[in-house]
Structure formats: C-alpha cells, structure tokens
Length: 189
Image (cartoon, rainbow, N blue to C red; front, side):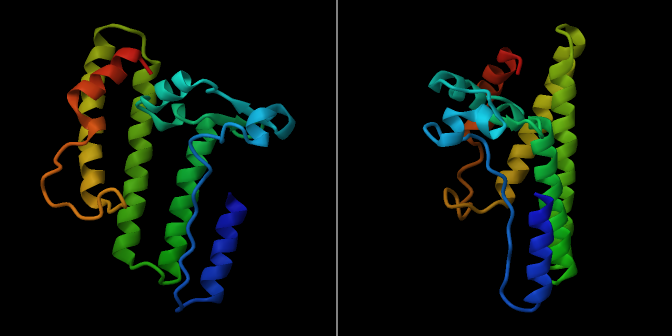
C-alpha cells in the first residue's frame, strides 16, 4: 500500500494545480466468493475467515470492523491491514495538503478523525480482551457510549450516495440503536 501512496505523491507533484485527486482504498471487507483467490487462498497467500452466509452475517455485526474482514495474508494480519489502511489514508491526506489538493483545515480534520478512530478501535480491542465480569461491564458501557457518539458524529459529517443530504429527520441509524448495540455486545466480539 505504501507504494501506492508514493505513486499518489508522484501524481500530486506532477499535476499540481490541476484536478487530480488520488484516493486509496484497501480491498475490504471480503474477498469475493467464487473468485480464484477465494477458492484457493493458500496458493495466493491468503487466509479466509468467513465461508458461509451465516459467518458473513455474524461478522458484519462485529463492533470492530477488523473482525468483519474476511481475509488476511501470510504477510499481513487483520490488525496489520487495519493499521496500514488508516496509515495510508492519513499519509495521503497529508500529501494532498502539502500539494494543495486539500485545504489545510480539511486535511487536519481528516487526520484528527483518523487518529480518533484508531484510538477508539484500540479501546474496543482492550474491552474485547477483558475477562467477563463487572469491570468489563463498566468498560462496555463506556465503549458503547463512545461508539454511539462516534457514529453520530461520523454520519453527521459524511455525505454519501445513501444519504447525500441530512434533512434532519434521520437522527439514528440501524447500527447505532440500543437494540443493535446490545446484540453485538452479547455476542462478545
């Protein structure tokens, strides 16, 4: 992925001042069932985690998106894939700022969001690693509060094809309801 970031810098430098906006996006969360790599992962250096529809469905309910990942490679664990993904997007954002493809304030905001996301994922990992008991329950309440707050902040600030404009009537999404969060927490993932 770092070679891709380097190539993006080459493009930003070469076409500085023009409408060149490189993006980077890892191949996540699943390898396509029926693809050559999915059918013969060992040959290509992959390990597949989810094979059945039920395994995929359960993975999509995970509180930490790294557990949704269907794959890791012989060179990169799921933890590594998550880390390098955020690192590459962060580095490319700073390059866009450097070459004036993004205003400084926007780049700072994106980098702050990435750093905040990584910190929250670390808290989720710490929570999930705890032994069952009262301390885990207490931490679970705090993690829940933080995840709900994070989701609301993210959805308030992101335009997408599904929700290009916030008309003010969608204050909750399916994945940040108390019921959805409780289902995920009960599964212990």
